Image (cartoon, protein in one colour):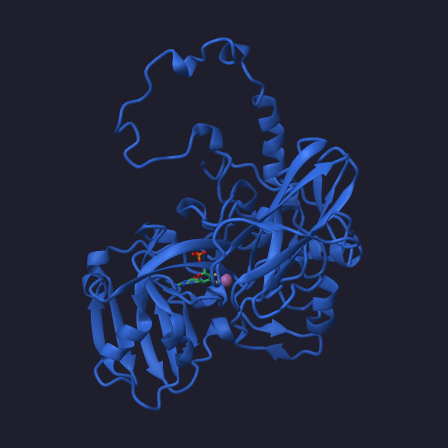
Length: 437
Ligand SMILES: Nc1nc2c(c(=O)[nH]1)N[C@H]1C(S)=C(S)[C@@H](COP(=O)(O)O)O[C@H]1N2
Ligand SMILES: [Mo]
């Protein structure tokens, strides 16, 4: 879909981010923003009228003539009826598309794996298009022998397959001061969950021989931003991967082709894409992304720094503002939960704004530092509902309410907002982003 033809957030270009924050601060509880998705859903509702000629007892058009042959689609694509299922951005959020973000359409997905074409993108200098034959990874600094690897060299190390979530620390960042963006794609879509194939950073470092006084690494990207972050050596030796495949195929260019760092459970910013250099040192580098950015400004003016781990979080992806309830009777509520500290042990769901909680049914793999899928199969009498989900992880940590979080962190930060999300489900089945605590 071309940029020009894409429907934009309604009215958004006329309203600045500051105006939105002001609206939120004056106590407007429900988000005032209609999303492109909501508009398209309305259009879709019209287009979704079935042609009786294709319904039983008639023989449908697609059954009465031959289908396409093999190779009609050498690289498979989704059905044309799924073309609304795309990553979307919020135009007014950033000044340029090269230093920006788009969001995973969580409300359209199920299971735990994010399809490669739908993984949100976040980058600071645009997507680098790299010829893998010309890509090199350099290891230098406090090592016995500095090394330069080609992609071919790297693929000779033993390989590992691991499913991990990646969440940008700024996910839900616009919601710190109140409900703002009316769609779970926008409030929670800076997360994806992928099976990576890669090699252990530990094995690569062993090859170079790390000096005894080494404590930190600096990971650097080959994009125009040359984005870099300091990584404690302990973490690198524990579970960090250098990945070249996602969900079985080569990394997408947007996700760092041909090589990216995988830093399980830690904020997305650490997962350097287009990885070209690892310097070994004895202290952190204090790079831009760990000083002016990706630090959490507290109410008293101090900043929390090196807040690596993504705490347990969950969100209901249906019903959601882009996924209304179809009607009374049998319904399926679903969502995802994840924790950077371990596995998801339990997810609670409330339909009445936290008065009563029930345990959701988890289905699918429950993996360490991966997205976990939950369901609540319920009967709806058409009454208005305030739905929320609350994740518990294997360390005993329980996802906090937004007010609990604000009491500790204030509202200055845009990072690490893992508070409980509330959706208001109206008796019409329409859903809105609201806040009740
Ligand atoms: N080289 C490089 N790596 C990068 C970035 C970047 O701009 N350049 N952005 C970081 C940020 S802030 C995040 S949240 C993740 C996003 O990964 P994704 O694009 O696969 O979703 O990549 C990280 N790695
Ligand atoms: Mo990020």
